[in-house]
Every structure is written in C-alpha cells, then in structure tokens.
Length: 378
Image 1 (cartoon, rainbow, N blue to C red):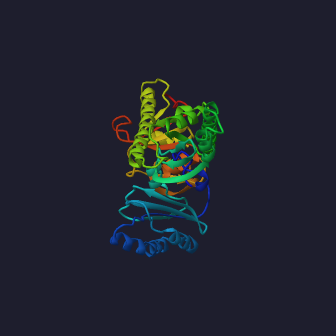
Image 2 (spheres, rainbow, N blue to C red; image 1 turned 90 degrees about the horizontal axis):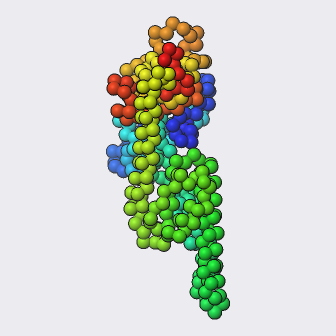
Image 3 (cartoon, helix red, strand yellow; image 1 turned 180 degrees about the vertical axis):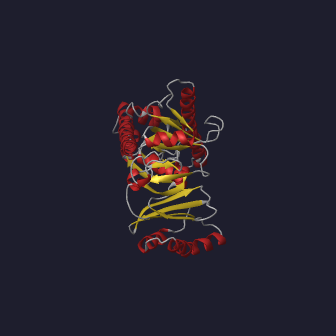
C-alpha cells in the first residue's frame, strides 16, 4: 500500500528506494466489447512503451502480469501498478477514476499523483449489523464500495429460544433474565470486534444497525473514545427482508457528512491563518516549496494541480527545488512536473497532502500549506 491508513499521505519508504521504478496507470474497466478488447491489448501496449523507456525487463514482466481487468466493478475503474527491482510493490484499483490515456512512467521514483488525487481525504469506516443472535462488523474505505474485511460472532439462538419458550422449565423472570443476558453477551462480543478493527485501522465513522435493543447495547459496551464516532441506523437487515438500498443510501449520507466536516475544518484553519500576524500558512507554489525544503509543512492543500510548473527533484534533503534555485545543484536528479515532485517531497518530510475543491483556498491561489511553525518574517 502506498497510502497511509487514512489515505491522506504516501509511504515515504517507497520514495527512499534508489534505482529504477516503473509505474502504470491504466483503465481496466469491463462491461462492453470495446472495453474487453482494450483490456486484452493493454499488456502488450504497456510492454512496448516500457521497453521504449528502457525499463528493466524484470519490471516489464511483473507489470504486465499485474494488469488484469477489474471484474465485478462498475466502470470506470483504473489500476495503478508500480514495480521496483522486478517486484510489484503496489497494485491498487481506483473505482470511479476515468483514464482516457494509459500513463507509463519510468524513472528514479514512482509516480503516485493520480492515486493520491483519487484517494486524498479518503478514510475507513465500520458498519456493524447487530442482533440478539450475534452480529457482523464490516470494514469499508471511501475509495471503493467493496468491503475491505468482515468479522462476525454467532450467539446461541437455541438457548435464547429455550429461555423464552419453555415455561414449564423456566418461570417468566428467568425467561426474561436469560434473554437479556444473551443480548448483553452478544453485544459485548460485537463491541469487542469493533474495538479490535478500529484499533487496527484508523476509522472516522462507526455505523451500528440492527434491532433497537441490540444496537443500543453494543453502543453502551463501546469505549468512550469510540462513542463520538458512532452513528445509529434505524434499520435491521439481519432478520431478512430489509431494504439494503435504503441502508446504503443512509450510510453514504453519513460518509459525506464526515467528508464535509473535514473540509470545513480545513477551510476554517486557512481562514484563521489568513488573519493571523504570526501566520502558519504558505500561499503559492514558491512559499510551499520553501516550507517543504525546511520540513515546515504539515498539510499541503492543492486545489489546482500545478501541472504548468516544473520542479527539480533532489536525491537528499531538502528533496526539491525550483528551476531558478541556484543551490543544491549536486543533488539534482532531474526535473519533473510539479505535482510529482511535490507529492514526493510531502511524503519524505512526513507531511500530509490534500486535494481540495475550488473555493477552499483564497482567490487565485492553487496551492497552500498549513505549517508546523510560523514563516520567517510573518
């Protein structure tokens, strides 16, 4: 995985590998005859381009073997594949990304810009479906409708049945007590699954559905640190006959609200710094480059992709420089489009990059950075 758990940043260890990288971004959608024909031709097409760019033979073999179609996913779907030293280091599907022309790059570092753009701001979330007889917890990421993982527990419904339905063996108070204990025990186990999965993957939302008593019992069992993330869904699909599409629509609204809140918080941070005499905000590509050179940038915000700019990539700190910068000549490994160099420097300085909608940054500014300490002279 190139992206960190919350998919806002890039794993810097991939950029620290020295040598040749080969990266491919291609459409791998299926569903039409033309799409199937394009998928069949893709490996040969990519192999020719890689050879023309002097890619290593082992990287070419690894990449074309990984370029398989995305079965079962609605078009458009892109695949980003990166190979290093004859091994596929990254192979990720990007649902919803339309690739008009296959992109093939060979160079001293990988090109993850399209992947970062598609996944910037993405996050993981849990959906728990609970009932008196147990429950399941599903892990999702906002980048795809497909489940990432699922875990479940199964109670002992026959014990609950006996406790409720055999008055000759149990009196009424015992019936009630046994049933309530069963619900409590199952809820405790579902809550433990949620805790484990939330600890393993940084999640921003926990959706709990099921019958009222079960979901309330699960929520009661959760640690206080997780409760602010919980949203209750008044839908119960475990008994069969539930409206799955209605549940999915409500979950999408909850996910959208988390994204909107996140962007609003970023917008407020930018606005606060604009009126601050000790500004921790860099505006424009020159100020952002200067901040990255000092490892001062905490979050780089990009609303326009800076494709018209070219920057120099360096093989050591400060990792990047403008074309006009007379310093660091001995470290220059080449010039590339600014988005590629900016993303690499962001990762190598342990910053986060966010691709934000137009309007979040001040008028006329396509790139900015929230800083770890104020700019000199601010």
